Structure formats: structure tokens, C-alpha cells
Length: 219
Image (cartoon, rainbow, N blue to C red; front, side):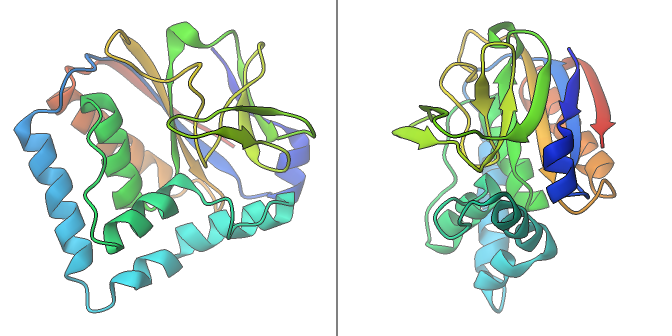
């Protein structure tokens, strides 16, 4: 499977980079150790002198700027990392879905970067990261149909299946998933990506029986 960035998106957001991780996993219930770590990260944010400051870090600002450059209102369509952080500072727990999804959400909160997560067996061919076109939409996970026009989206041979705002039901990870692709999205360069890809692998190995893990950067 190849992952590439479309030239039109790259022209509008020239520092876009993707950190890709593949792994064989068991998408079982999260162990208590992972749940405890998620809770600790939430508490770390809530204990900050100004918790809302996490919404103004460079990673979040770069995602907002990219959405604006692509023609999407970042106040209406938020990157998933910002949505999770807003949930945290509102006093809510991080969602608890399964060990794999919970690891991805934990890395997103820690890195302040959106992360897409896909069941490789449900992906049809290579993936391109491009700008959503007029009329494109899909049912987002736990959401109504997401209007993809102007959003950065991941597309396979079948069509769009993910975005830094919300991934689709078509390629979502379930208890039957055995092989995953996770993509860390950064609109401000590749410098942070290797660190967070390694962190993700460490967590998948520890909490989701992660094996045969591979990582690469796309620019």
C-alpha cells in the first residue's frame, strides 16, 4: 500500500507531512494500564495553570490554518486532536472504544496532532491525501454524513474514507480488525512525526499485542 500527498493539497499547504504506522493488532478491550494512562494525560491537562492554552499550540494552529487555506471553516470543522482536547478541558473523559482506538486517541492528545486509523483489509488499494471535492461525503464514525468539500481527505480506489476531522465507517477499526494503518497528520513539517510514530508503536505493542510494526514518513 502506498500513501501519497496530492500536489494540489501540497501547493496550498506546503509543509504537510504524514507519519504512517502499520501493525498487526488485537482490537480488544483496553487494559486497565492503558485506561489509567489516558486518565493521567487528562489530569495533566486539567492541572495546567491555563488548560485552554493547549488549543493554541503550534500543531493546533497549523491544522486550523491548513483548513482555512483549503476553504474549510476551522471553527466549524475541527481537527480530531482539537476536538479531543476540547472534550478534555470541558471535564470529560477520553472515549474508551478498544485498545487500538484508545492508543490512537492517546497519541493524538499527547502530540496535539490528528491521527487517522484504518482497517487495512477494508482499504481498497493505494491511498492519496487530497482536497475533498464538491458533492463528496461519507458517514463519519458516530456522526451524520460529513461534508468533505474543502476538507483534507484520505482516498482509496473506492473514494474518500478518512480525514483529520473524522474517519468513515467504511474503514473503521472494529473487534474483527487484525491489521491497521495509522496516519499522523502534521501541517507544519515532519520534525515531530518520527517521535510520535515510535510512541504509537510502543503503546500498540504494550496494550494491543502490536506486532510486525512498520513506520515511514510521507512528504
